[in-house]
Amino acid sequence: MSMNIRILHDALETIRVDALVVGLAQPIVPLTGAVTALDHALRGAIGRLIELGDFSGKVGEAVILYSNGLIPAPRLVLVGLGDRARLRVDLIRQAAGVALRKARDLRCRQVAAWLPDVASESIRASDLAQAVVEGALMGTWRFAEHKSEPDGPSVEHLMIVASRREAIDDMRRGAESGQIVGEAVNTARALAQQPANVMTPPALADQAFALAQEAGLSCTILDEHQIAEQGMGGVLAVARGSAHPPRLVILEHAGQGGAPLVFIGKGVTFDSGGLSLKEPSGMETMKADMSGAAAVISALAAIARLGLPRRVIGLAPLVENMPDGRAYRPGDVVKMMSGYTVEIISTDAEGRLTLADALHYAKRYKPAGVVDLATLTGASVVALGEGVAAALFANDNAWAKTIRAAAGFCGERVWRMPLYPEYAGKLRSDTADMKNTAGRTGGVGASAWFLKRFVDGKDGYPWAHIDMAGMMLATDARGYQPKGATGFGVRTFIRLAEMDSRR
Image (cartoon, rainbow, N blue to C red):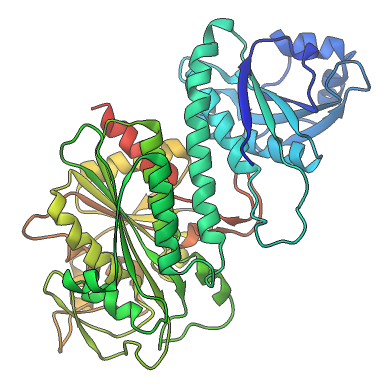
C-alpha cells in the first residue's frame, strides 16, 4: 500500500493524528520553540521524562508518551537524533525509520512527524523532508505476499510538519523525491525476498520489463539464443544446469544523451553452488543472490521517474546456478564474450562469470563510468563483517572518490580495498587464460582482479566493483532497515546519477 504524504505548517499541539513524532537532538535541554509549546500543552510531561532519565536523545532511541487527552494526538513518539554538532542526513533517515516503525507496530494509520529541530545551514529543507520520507517508507516495509493473514495495518498517511511556512515548497519537492527513492528501495527488497521458485530468471526479466514500462524506461531483454549470439559464454555456462533459461536485461534512461553511466547487477536468482554444492545451512538465503540485479532494475526505474538529465544504462545478467546433468563442471574451460578463456575451479564462483560478460558488453556504450554490484564472495563478509560495509574496488581514484561520496551521503557504507597485481598470479591457469577463483585466501581481492581483466585493454573505462555480500540481508531491525532484504545499492546508484547530473 502506498503512503499518502503531505507537508503542513501547524502548531504541534493542535495536530489530530494517531501518533505525533518529535525528533530531538542533544543537548535536549532546555526545550525550545515548538517543543516548549508542546510540553506546556502536555503540562510538562516531556520535561519530566527527560529529568527522570527515560529519554536522552541518543541515536535510535524512541519512547512513547501518552497525551491523556491534553492534545488531539493520543500518542507522542520522541525519537533521538544524537549529537546536534554531528547531525547528518542519514541520522534523520534512521530516526524516521525507528519512529514510524514504532507507530506502525502500535497500529497507527495517521502519523505527523516534526524533525526541524535539526534544520541547519548544512541540511537543506528539501533534504530533511526527503530523508524523513525515505526513512518512513523503508523503516515500515515488510514482505507479506505469501502469508495467508496480514501482519496488521500500515501507516497510510504521513504529515511532515514544517517549522517555517516559507520552507513548505522545498520540503514538498524533497518529499516527492523521497517517495520515489524509498519505493525503489522497497521494490528491490521485494524482488530479493521472493522465493526462487517464483523469481526465476524469466520472471525477474518480466518484472524488469513491467517496471520499465511504468517508469518510461527503454527495456530490451535478450533470451538464451540471443545471449549465445553475443558469445556470452560465462552467462551460458552458469545457466546450463537450470531448467530456467537465462536472460540479459538491458535498461536505458536516455536523459539528455552523452556518454552514459552504466550500472551492472549480479542476478543469480538462486545459487546452489552448482556441482561445487554449498553447505545446506543457510542455503535458503541464496534466493537473494540476485540483489545486485534487483538494485539496478529498481534504481533505473527511480532515475527515470525522477527525470534526471544523466543518461544511464542498467545491465542485469539473470541466471540460476543448479547442479543437473548439463551443469558446467570444475575443470571445464569456458570461452567468454571478450575472447578470454576461463578454467573453472569452482562452480560456486559463478557470479563473476556472468558479470565479466556484462562488463565486456558495456564497452559498446563507451561509458563515462561503470559500477557493478554483486553479492559475490563470502570472503568480503569475513573481511568487513555482516551488516557493516561493502567492499569497494576501483581502477580509477576519482571514480572511487565519487562513489564513496555518494554512498556515504546515503548511509550505504563502502570501504575501498586494494587491487594488488599479485592477485593476477593467483588466478594463473595452466589450461586457460585464467582460473575463475584463487582459492580461500585473498578471495575478495582475487575476485575483483578477475573482473578487472574484462574491463582493461581496448575501450576500457573507469570502473568500480562493489561486493555487497555482507549487506544482502539484515538479521534484525535497525534504523530504517527491517529484518530481511536490504535493497542495498539502490540509493547509491540514484545519488551517482544525481551527482553526475550536476557537473
